Image 1 (cartoon, rainbow, N blue to C red):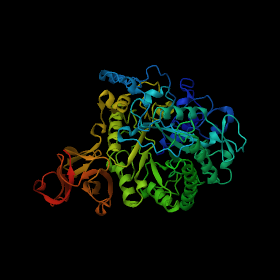
Image 2 (tube, helix red, strand yellow):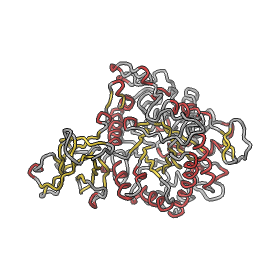
Image 3 (cartoon, helix red, strand yellow):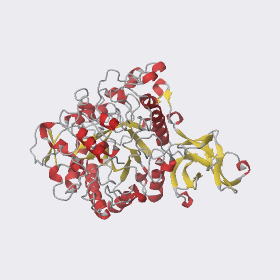
Image 4 (cartoon, rainbow, N blue to C red):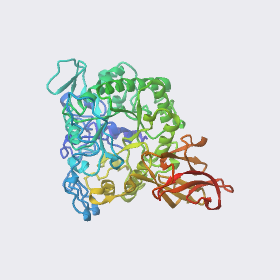
Length: 617
C-alpha cells in the first residue's frame, strides 16, 4: 500500500512535527491510534517517525504521532461542533441522534462490552479477555479527539493506540527508576503520559484498547544492517535482539493488565505491516534482494519474544501479526525496490516457526486503490473490505485444527472521501458496506476504522479517510458510522440491524450467473432473495462457506470448499426444521454450470445438488 516516495517524505515530516496543524487544540490524552500523516496507510502506526521519540524531554512522539509540541498528526482541531453529524443531527457522546431524540446517559459507555477493563484487584488472577459482542464490532483510531465520551458513546467496542518503544525506552537504563518511569525486568521505561491517561480513560468507559507495539529505538537497532526507505523510517528497522522488544511488550502487558490502576490492553499487535520491508526492515530493498527465510526468522523471533512476555503477564491476552492487504503469494517480490511478501507466505512461515503459540491476524483491508472507495470480492488476491472472506476462508482451510487462527481483527483501514476518485457520499456508502461485510464474515471480531479526522498532508495527496475533515467538521460518513449501532436511540443499519443474524443474499448477473453471500456481491449483480443465518454458532447449527466457482460463487458446508477457492464463512444454518425455518438447497444449472441457492425443493426446475440446512426467512 505505497504511494510515491515524495508522499512518504511528507508523511514522515508531519509525523516528526514538521507541520503546525492544530498544534494546541487537541490534548495528547486522546492520542490513540494516531496515523503518521500521508497517503500511505501502512504508516498508520508511524506515530513517531525516525528518532523523534528518542528526544527525551523533547516530546511524546510516537503514541501522540508527534515530536514534542509540534504538529499532531490527525489532531482533533476545534471541538466546538463535536458530535454534529451533518444533517443527521448530533451523534456524539450526549447520545443525540437528530430527530431520534436524546439517549441521555447512554452516551457514556461506562459498562460496554468490555466491562470496566481497569476493574479487579492486583491480587486476583488474570482477567478474562474482554470479548465484544457483534453489536460492538466497530472501533476507531480516535486521532486525539478531545471528547472521549463522543467516541465511547457511539457504540465503540475498541480503540487502537500506538505504543512506541522508541518513546518508552529511548535510552537503555537499568533500575532504580524515577517517579515517571516504569520498572520492568530490571529496566526503566519512561511512561508516555498522554497514552497512559488515554488507556485508562477508555478502559474506564468500557472500551477495549488495542496496542500497536512498534518503533525500535536507535540503541536497539544499531548492530545490523537496515535500509530505511526514507529519512525517519529508521524506527521500522528490526531489532538487534528480539528479547529487548519482548521485554517492552511484557512491560506494557503488566502495566495495562486491568488490575494495576492504569487500564487494560488485551490485544497486542506485534510491529506493523510486517509483510512489507518498508515497515519491518531487515536491511534489504532498494537494489538489495531480501532473504525470505531471514525475514521470516527475524519476525518470528520478535513475535515469539513478545508473545511469551505478554502471556506471562496476561494469560488471556491476544497477540497478533500485522499485515497489509497484499495477501496472495503472487505478491512475493523480495527482490523489488520495495520488497513485499504475501500475507499467506508470512502466516505459513510464522506458523512453522512459533510452535504452539496462538497467533491471530491483524489485517489492514484498505480498498485496492486507496484513493477510490470501491472494493469487491474480485479484489482477491488482495484482502480488502470486499474480499474479507478470502482471509477468513483461507485461515480455516489452512489451519483446520487451530481455531484461534480463525479470529481476525481489522486494526487499521478507511475509505477515501476526496475527489476526483471519490466523494463524501461515496465514502459514506463505502463505510456502511465495509461494516456490513465485516459483520457478514464470522471470525472478524473487531473493525477499527482509521481515522477520526483528516490530516492536511494526506488530503494534499488526495486521501481523506477521516470521518471528519481537517477542520473537524463531520462528513456524511460520520453519521453513518456513529449511528450504525445505536439501538438505544433507535438507529441500527449497515448490517447491525440483522444481528444476531447475518443475511445471506442471492444475487444474479446475466454475464456471470448467481452469487450467494453474506457480504456485498461484485459490481453488476442484482439482489434477488435473502435469508438469515446465525452469525455465531448455536446448538444444532453448522457453518456454511462461500466458494468461488469461475465467475460465480456457490455455497458449501465444507471449509475445504470442495477443492474450490474459498471466499469465506457465511454463517450458521440449522440442522433441522423448526421455529419458522425453511430448507435451503444448492441448485445447479447444467447448461451454464451456474449454481444458486433456493428454498424450492425442486430447485426452480434445475438440478438439486444438496440441502444446505435450514435458514430463517
